[in-house]
Length: 494
Ligand code: AMP
Ligand code: ZN
Image (cartoon, rainbow, N blue to C red; front, side, top):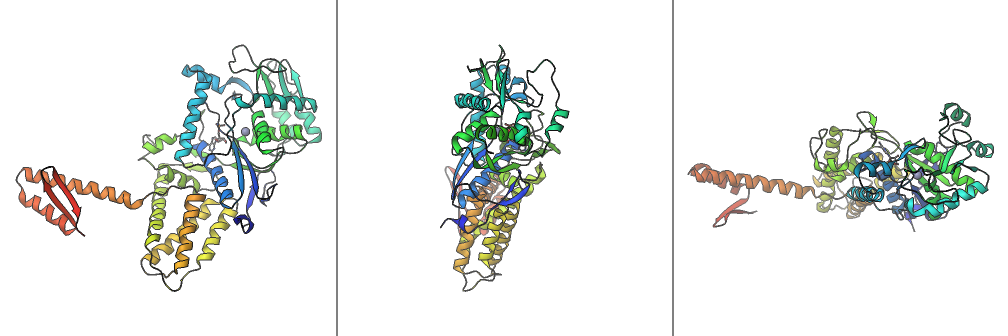
């Protein structure tokens, strides 16, 4: 029997503002769509936070036994420099600056995106469609929205008619905005736009002569509006209605609001049952962003090569730091916070290694089954990873107490601890096992080598009192030195 039948998962739905019991549209199956990156520069840690948050969701749904189809797109066309649909295409601009083909830019940063997420141990999505691979489908969708009377052509572009849509539906339903307020706050770019109303958004944009990424369409040469690809690709791979749609909080408006409008305009029903939004990672209290330069790259974290870092960090330590915060909370990045996460992470890994060495007793001093359920309760409460991690540290206490013979555990309970720790740490949180002992071993070996060097220096100046003292003290510690023609080696004598 799949686990989900015994667990009640609740998801905070941004659409309703409530934590709701998760009931997929088709029993046992989940369709999930997450907005992917615009591949015009290296992904920063803020982007990674959002993708790690949804990797946690994907992993837990799979762990519960759901068959999940996870679609995450690559935006490789159509995203203009500013979200108000003006300016140069982000990819084309970068291509110009780096003197590369737009598709070279796309390839370069898609590869970086994949490599980075792989380092963080994110699972690949089931399908990763690209905007440029779905131009035909996007044109078809624009045609059907025009046919349904909710879009109009103007000077080679096609715009979504927000006011018309709002007559029968609710534009602003997700972001809790009112169309009247939007009208009051939207700047009309006099003479620059052919929109009927300034709050209308582009489904298809006419390509100006200098615009390289262009495709033929019934309205002339152009390119799709940024919001359209997600509607088209989620519809194609997950159906007219699907279970979960995710993305960063900053995409709620206008991107996701427009997705709801487009999907509803096409199919007569809202596309998504549960909307999920991940909160922002900040640096110095401000949102990490590509455009402002206020960001940190994962590669710097792994090498330690950045002035805000005191050292290098293992990708799993960074992942652990991210998962120690709830995905709905703002998280501020700092070196101190990473150092604290590293300590916690090593403590956890140490305890997992100790689990193999515990001796069993006839009875148990604690209720391990209740502890196990508390781990599931944490995840069932809208993927509350910090609460789960607090429960894992409870287990660390039990394991250490048992190791020091201050707590008794039966064989069955030790087995439950082992499987649950492994399930939660590695399958659900997606951490990678770091062998803490081997880290200690390699430090130990370096220290022995250092002492051998010091002994050799003493011998070179005929200070045999010192060199013999080093040899004898090491022997007392169980390290036997052996002098051979090739140099000095050692072995552990006990
Ligand atoms: P982009 O490539 O800019 O479209 O962003 C890709 C994803 O990263 C989107 O889901 C954004 O919401 C998310 N994102 C961007 N900046 C941050 C940040 N500082 N913290 C968390 N997520 C972010
Ligand atoms: Zn999207």
